Image (cartoon, rainbow, N blue to C red; front, side, top):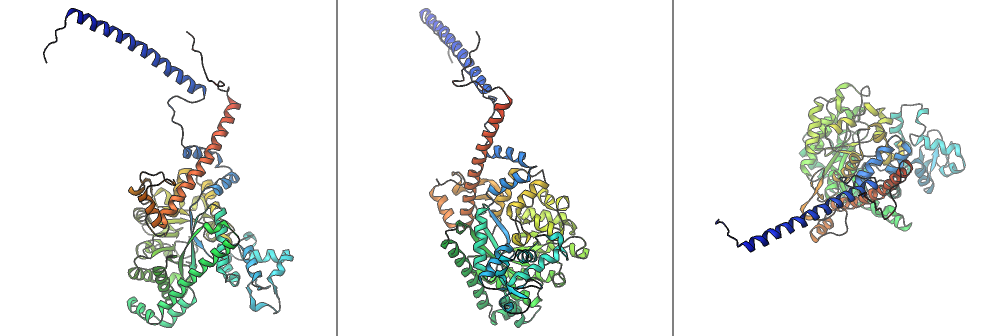
Length: 561
């Protein structure tokens, strides 16, 4: 570029302009510096550093949570208020409290056998029995029934806690025929506990077991399955599906009639087979469960239940996993959640501790494992844990159940192992009524026993309860179990917001899972906002007692010249 030649006058004007510009620039720098100092002092006067970022609601609530950790009562109130998403390991008849079952039995005019506290209409008028409604005016009898039907006062039992737990189902079973009323009760309780979704386990029933018994056994599963179809499997599974539909409809009707907000709790069903039955009956129940879940919008999965240490359950465990594997090949869209590893040293021979979880995952194709207590006794347990973490096989953790039935808790419980290895964790209540607990208590125990678990971890457990549920449809999250990035349709929207674009709305309208997750995000945000506000007020009041108050408005500080 050529050299510029300026006339003298022009040069003088240019120099003058530069001097003026420099003077103005200096004035600007002075004012800017003064403003920054002033702003910094204002921040300091308010007790903040000028470089501080205002903490989010989540951060504020996380701070408050740590202050509650050593106070079980405060923790209880905190978790009761916290939206918990779903309780997805939940037994229909085990979840109802004994007191509510007494009401059900009384409404049906049932009578109680005073020798063993079983209940049935056939006892009425017989010796050593009386109408169960009489217990309302006989507090001793009422208490005896509650103790016989639950784990209340379990320290006074004449039998092992484990035996008493499993025996209760046969004792109060006669009071559980009105499953719609029981479900209505569970929905009502869930709503008041800030639980918006339940996955309820319900049995495949005696008709399916009898079908299996009638059909007999064949080592060739394909042949056996064909015989079941010829002998009436479609009809049995349709009846099972109709039962679920009727239970759902009638429970909602009960809640509607009494204007109970429990009607807003969404319920889906997992159909169960009983692993302690003969192999023919188990296969019949499993086939009916798979077929019902395949054709029903309400039945979303299958499971196996009953004591894992039972002789037949132990002897046929691997065979039952192969049954599930075969039926999964016939019904590949049906979800599978399996009770596995609900065992501990001394309960069974050590050989039975070596493979149950592994086979449930690798052969039974389970998407979720219930309990998994004996994981560290498994052969190649590290490999199983890595496989569960890699494939997103969730573990359902139920600390109250494991403590009462198996005597496993605290540092002996495998919860920290699953957590450390990155296995997706869901907290669940199991049989809340029999165990005299609820979902919130599971959170309290984990918070009390494991100080390394912070609020953000509990929030992830809550999100897991919907992400790893069997609700139909796509998730709002781009990667399973990663709650940082939304799918493209909703990426421009704030999770839980009512202001959404057309594509996101279409997704939520077409996916039960996405809709439930969106609601949960809104509920969590509202919860955090409310608690964060309380935290800020608490900190302000504490600050005013400990330190000089900040200058009163207009917050003007005079800087000496």
